[in-house]
Length: 213
Length: 209
Image (cartoon, rainbow over all chains, first blue to last red; front, side, top):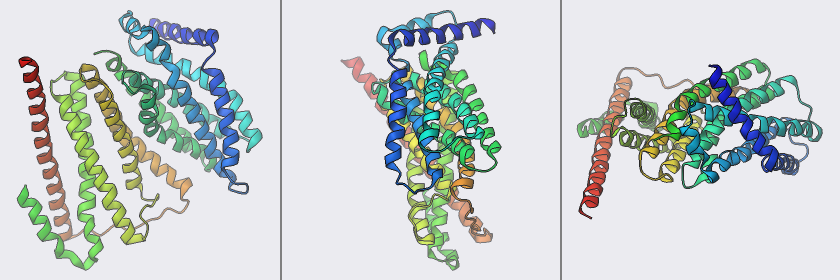
């Protein structure tokens, strides 16, 4: 158990260090999320429901995450690292969890900018929304990094990731939007937690088959 | 099997008292249930592939999902026609089942994209099997999500008392569902036989070349 945690931490740290040196994903995500919010401001006519803005926050988060996840396995692919990782004496699912944690760190950093920007441009945020974002981040990153690993095995690569991921992300959007607009946010937060749990177990159990033959 | 399908066409007109449009019920609901069966069967075969490494399970899973997508498209089509006749709209977001089918339809279309963009081999079989398993998990999760979404997208839940199923109607319904399942089973066997022949032919060609 401790070994597994150490493996995961090492793999996540490797990604964070790569990002710290190359700085190609995070600035892109930050710029993207702020530009998207500005575009949304012009996309919804003034006087339309303030609730509509909450939905836009979720669209922005989802697509920003996709942007980051599309890059997630690119260094591995370019240098053939994945084969080495698969051969390494660690549990294969540690590769997925490490990648998921690194993606989560990027997404959270992007949101540290995005959420205040959203509050500034559109409407203030309440606790339920932030809790919803936190829970949804976990689901988005865990499922997203799993699907990203699938998509790099294909010829279409980056093209395939959104196609595979968006249908899986619909329940996340439902839970997240529900938590931010509906009364009785607890039910939606519970649903998000359930989603995270179910898909985390499924990803953990089946990741081995994605990277091996 | 053909006999059971013919029977449906003879039995269905028996309960015309519900109005003509009601008859689509006997096609729409069985097709939808059959599509679930297809997806479930595909997921089960995918599971067998991953767990037992049974040769051929990958192909069986693919064929089941392929048919499931066809039945799913038919469900969307018949549901849409029914909605137009009953409520005057081609599409209603308040119809849970139809929305669920739309989500599943998108999901399984992505399955095809995945399948056709990976080269044939054990890696593709694994990827597809894993994705098919995700689909089986996604069905209840999406169902729950769509139920929840009703509460904020449509504050007033549009309740509609389903057609009361009694006597001949129940019988007709069961017969038409059995017919749909039989249709699925037949198509499944035919398609599978075709695909198997295809792969054997390819192997033979490679041997000869």
